Length: 195
Image (tube, rainbow, N blue to C red; front, side, top):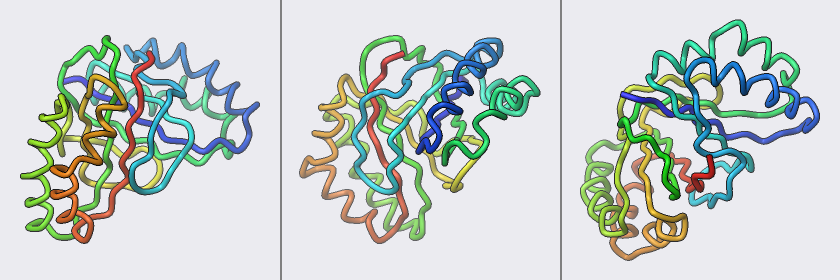
């Protein structure tokens, strides 16, 4: 299975962070990483908002973790130490190449009531499918590298960001969400594929 390196950041020192970006790109490519979304337009639907989002596809979870923990990546990241607040999570996903236009619905979730959240999931899946969404990662293996660890990570692909946002606001999805609100803590955003 492939993996997605999902980074949500608030940059506080743009010059240092730009230097990191220049140095990290070749290291990421050497580990088979390919940018799917990079500072792309997004819509924050729930939770904590970071204004910068990067999604990188890797051949496997192990290769993405190896990249993050490599000497080359640590050397690239050194200029940016303290230049941003980041949440970085690597999520195992289907082998979809993600080479078509579209948008990724990304949710990081801590479930506090499994029964109620199960009711949400039973309603949310059909609502997402009805809006042309398809899950590519759903509560599978992951590694939290930076920031708040949320044990459930979900990624769905939609044909457009507008279609994903429409899904979120639909009556069908909101009926499911009523069960999740008191049963979980969630960060949910939709980011355009622009890699």
